[in-house]
Image (cartoon, rainbow, N blue to C red; front, side, top):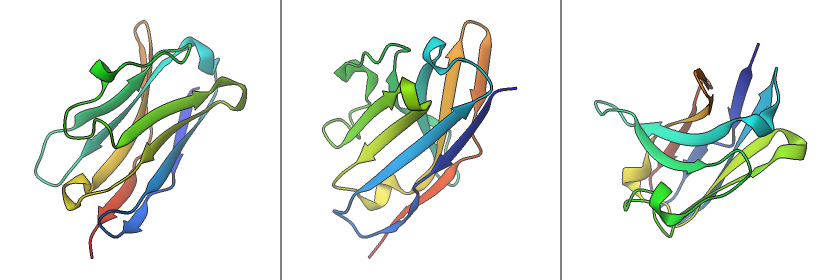
Length: 118
């Protein structure tokens, strides 16, 4: 059974950085496209970044709100995906979720809280 475990969230001041990690287990990580989503209180869950199974990304996979500040990456040998977040803003405050998808198979992690506040 596929499991995703996120870590790396926390409290950070505006302008700071965090690196989220997502550890995958239970199947072959390199088969799955991976994405990071976030959900702020009272808002819908939104896509933050997406990367293909082979590690290909392009700017179209980042919404304008995070483009140039967030970078998604993955290490298939370590079964781990990452989200590097720089120049964080208060509006980035949300629960961040890791997502993987391969065909009809889709899984979510439990989420990690990111709070940007002075």
